[in-house]
Image 1 (tube, rainbow, N blue to C red):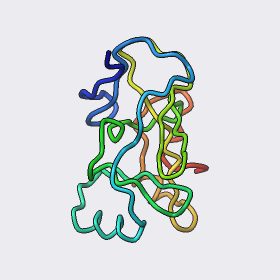
Image 2 (image 1 turned 60 degrees about the horizontal axis):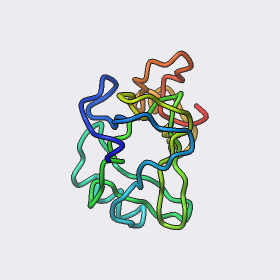
Image 3 (image 1 turned 90 degrees about the horizontal axis):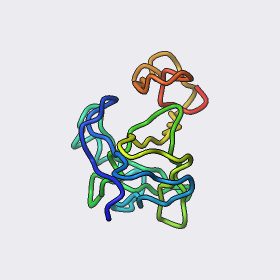
Amino acid sequence: MRRVTVRRSPVHGRGVFALRALEAGERILEYKGEVIMWRTAVRQYLRHNDPGRTYLFGLSNGRVIDGGRGGNSARWLNHACEANCEAIEIGNRVFIHVTTSVPAGTELFLDYQLAVDGSANDESRQQYRCLCGSRRCRGTMLGGA
């Protein structure tokens, strides 16, 4: 039985939703896509820029998973400052786990914790503005902002 589905999100575009109740710690998805170098990913992104959409998931080894190329439903996980999922990296693979029990129908979120070159300023915080609406919303998808 499928555990998640992609549908229109009230937060942003499409989102991933639980089809059944999910338990904390449950692995729900692998973030799939082409594993490439950051330089290649940036070049491809600039060439095929889709404003407001990027499916790049940075790995600790300096590479990136491009969910826009051979990706799956995980690329539709939206950001929330109070996320109910986390990403666990194992080698060149990233697995999405639920961090708290969620009922069926709930949208699933990651805290993107994005980083920008240099210090975050008002312009970069606005560029990566958060739409989650949670009580503890940072107002940005940037981490440590």
